[in-house]
Length: 471
Image (cartoon, rainbow, N blue to C red):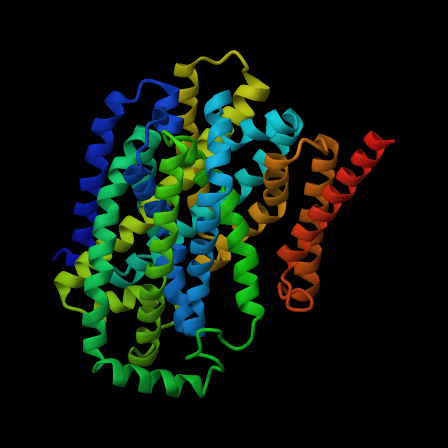
């Protein structure tokens, strides 16, 4: 007999793959694949951003943190929402204007324009390696779902998730996935909105839930507090995720596809507000699993366990589709970043500068397939969704935040300072991480020290340049 939950996943996978294959007939220009012809309206920009941002980390990962740490896990996704609001009214509109004026296709194009080709190449390689980690995180989440609902192993689940993502993204690029993301977003919203009250009813209502939370608070300090057991974890999330969601290449490249500044402000801000609200749902579901389901062997299994044990089948099936949508839409956003970055920032810049649009489109699709395969292999080695995502966000914040923000608002310093700052930031982040087991010093995470070191080097070089010019 076919497992009904597995059947839901198969049917839903077919539902999203077929439109992708149909869309592929209309993707003939590289600008459609990379930046959707720069014609995204506020609704499409909002849906493609939110669909990408509600992924493994904000569903399975956030529920796992809620299961382990309690209500303060809200800050994991909440920090992303804060970063998105800052992006909407500062960096987003400004960098869109640069992209439209100079025909940028990737964030690497901006780095080459502001610094030079070497900076573009170095940062692209760093982010490509980190991007594989975040893609692996999406596949780990999918494998955890299948582990609970179908009894498959981690490797099998990762392979199945990889097949779906590679197939439908390689066909469409940004123009097609923006429309499919809108459908996925509706599925996510309905799934979580229905699952939350029904799961709460299954454990006896709010009073029973709070009784269980208070009991768990006796074992885990700060479990019922919005601010947790001190500020260290919250500061870590803020420093790790706010910069990442301001300068993420995948997000900025979607902004490149916006038709005007108003679209950026509305679409990105709506995405940020939605993240702030949505972030409560998976955390509370993870906490419900912690106080009512016995024998959960790994925090990543909290949300899949809710599907099986706490809600009716039809709601569980819808929530399963919602989570599957979350993993797939976020994974396609990462593939989007990986494929376009490699083709535009590395292949066309350093290997084949004369490549035409058709050649770049072909290489983009080959790259999508290759990245998916590598991510499947990496997902078998990494232990959890959050551990995979933290690799990417650490590399992103440490290497890219200061060069992009500084470069948008100042014409000095130049590429040499940028490369020194990137190197120092990454090196310091890695050293402090290993010396402190990831905890940092004085409640500041290793990434915070990396960003500060980069900012100091840029500031000193800028001050020296101004002094020389004044003299």
